[in-house]
Image (cartoon, rainbow, N blue to C red; front, side, top):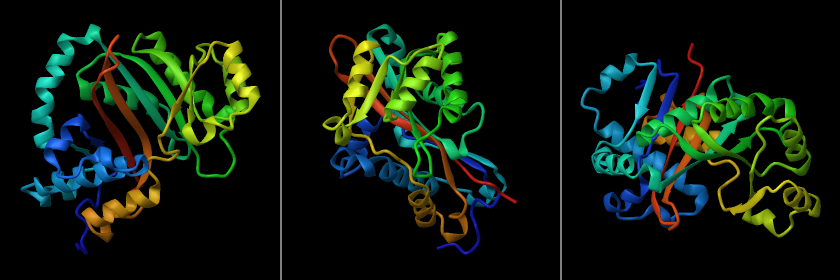
Length: 277
């Protein structure tokens, strides 16, 4: 492993997987065979390794402060599909599940995430965004912490960039508080499969009274833990590049055909960052 850092000045990296349904052609082991908690971590590891191996002049990375990591082979496969998607946009639904890390949130992070996700598809809008929140402490997020994040989603909704808005895995108190405060109300509530059987009657009654569509998901609560992220950096780049990295946001993107329910593509984009002296 390198004792000298490869990315000494780098402050932020965007990882873009493209259509992971194509990855089965590129790998012997399909990502869909992995547990949900490992899919994103494994795809970042593979993406980062492949990208680094393709860099013919790694010394130039010493001077960069921002990176965008994509798979060159994947991009070739995606280009034709992106054009097909543009041609068939009216036939497709695009949904984004956006995980925001409250401890590293900055004003503009939500717009950054949604716009980056849509750019990866060459799309201008999406049918819906479901917001998932991760905080480092044992206590659930507070309304005051969520307000600026939700306000960004409302701005995107007002600009017709986003259709419906939703929330995932918040408790009944926060769901009700946000619903009362928000100008643009959530219309979707996602509940983890583990919690679905024990969902309190208060939550179910509130969802029913306010016509919230309740959906069950199997996504991990924290899809990109900071310690696992640093392990990936250490394994790909070396220990000198592994310190300080924190997840900023992660957007999971799914496109499917309307009226048929057939998934045409799914993947994710994510931004990670750190402070550099």
